[in-house]
Image 1 (cartoon, rainbow, N blue to C red):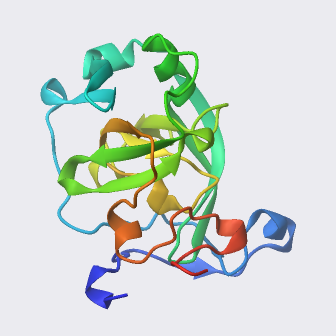
Image 2 (cartoon, one colour; image 1 turned 180 degrees about the vertical axis):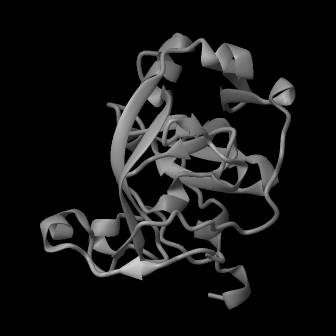
Image 3 (cartoon, helix red, strand yellow; image 1 turned 90 degrees about the vertical axis):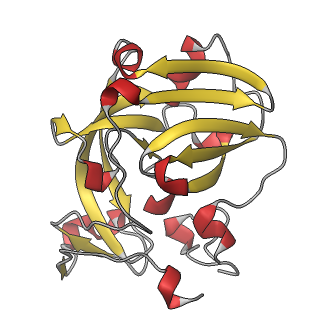
Length: 208
């Protein structure tokens, strides 16, 4: 992969994994107390009055919410470990947001309409996921981190959170879901990252 296309981390200080936490850290990862900032380009800043989140399948709209409407949806708090493809892990991170299950329910859906989804974000970023990895409490649109509004550098005002996959799948600045019938690669996947990204199987790059 062209090194110019790799994300840049700032403020990263790795440390040895506490033996008590070793079972929580995937192979090749090191625990950090920091929250490194990684991005492929400038950080977007969208006024909340202009922010929306939408879902569609083909040309069929499934739901759309303004920021105020999104805040009125049921919110969930979770504490999870996160694992970046650049080999850092951060344990016991605390998030708040709207689960994908709650979004589907708000849109009047009992299940995702297709087997795959493409998440689209401000800044031209996208990532693909199986919808099975988003439902059953496995994914959310997060708007708060550590009891504070999610900072823009970390994907605020809202990012996708799918903690059981490498963190590039938890797309920053998420704005819409496109439900797709055939899987296709998103931004980093098209540049050589793994199509799925399971940290426990070290699926960092294509061919892993």
